[in-house]
Image 1 (cartoon, rainbow, N blue to C red):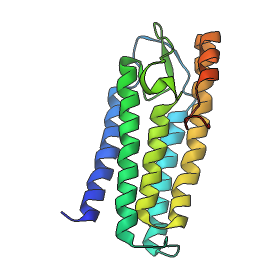
Image 2 (image 1 turned 90 degrees about the vertical axis):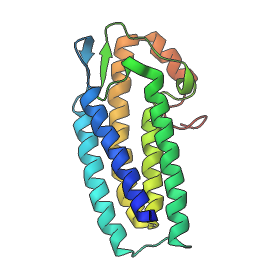
Image 3 (image 1 turned 120 degrees about the vertical axis):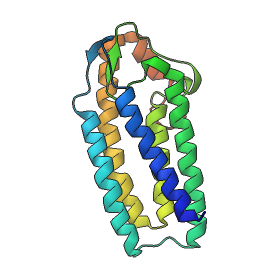
Length: 189
């Protein structure tokens, strides 16, 4: 198996897992309040367009990063996999409280265990780390920018929507939790 085949397999597995999550874990009847505000559609549309645009830019190879292409591909794959591990750790920590759309279940509480002790949005952080890995796999700084910039903006919008919903649902409990944790990067942001 060649490196490009491995990368395509990882990409398909990641994309497939996200599609499966979208179908399996949309909010259901136990939801007291849905507050997605179209953020899931914004996220999926932005990611799709950014991935296709960045592939086009990367295929031109006009802004290659220094060093061997294989080294960037291997490093990027490792970063991508680390991001997926973080994302799935967050999802498994939340269990039934995890949904792909922003919604608060009637009996839901603020989760402060596992990776949620440090980060408020570890699943999003994992996604962003995975996309950083993808950008490194390209080995092209311009393709990386085309990929990451719109995706970071879309996730920022999504995080704002989710935090407003969580504050509305949990009030002071969420405010206290937010004071103790960072959004995406431990000890920094």
